[in-house]
Image (tube, rainbow, N blue to C red; front, side, top):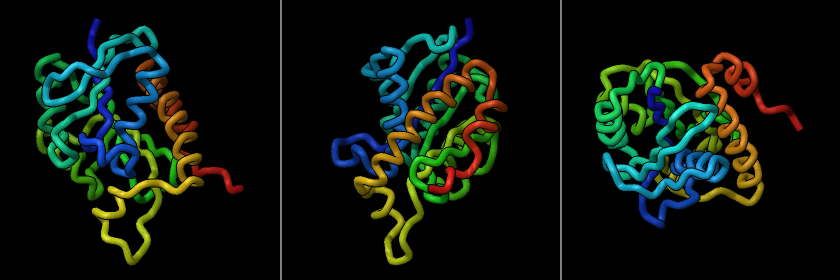
Length: 194
C-alpha cells in the first residue's frame, strides 16, 4: 500500500503556537486527534506521525524548518517514501486572502506570495500537488505582514477558525479517498453570509 503525506505548514517554537501562520499545524493537530495519530517522531526535519485514514496509510507532518524552508523537509519525506506529490501529497497552510476559517482547495497552483509554498515548489520542482488553504483573514492596511501572520486570532475569529479546521479535517479525508473534486465543490464556495 502506498504512503500519503499530509503536511501542515507553520513555525516551530512555543511563541508561534496559535498564530495565523500556524493554521496548517493546527489542522494537523485536529486530524491527529480525530484519527488517534501521535505526531511526535522527529524525522526529515519534521514532527511526523503514521496512521491510517480512510483505509490509506498516511504520514502527518509538521515541518520544523520554519515556514520559509518547509520544502526542504517535504522534499526529504517525498524522496524517502518515494511518493508522487501530484497524487500522494496534501499541503495545508494559511491564506490571508480568505476570511477566517474559509477554505480554498486546489489540485495545483502557484505560491501566490506564500513563502512556504514557494519553497515547496522550488524543492519539489513542481507546483502540481493538492493543497488546502485555510483563511486567516485579511491584513489590516496599517499592519506589517510579518507581524500580522505571526499574530493571534480574536475570540470571534477563533470560533470561525475552529469551524474551518473541522472542515479542513473532513476535506483532507475526502482528498485521501480520491474525492478532491467533491471536496472542492463542497468547501470552495464563499462562507454563507450571516
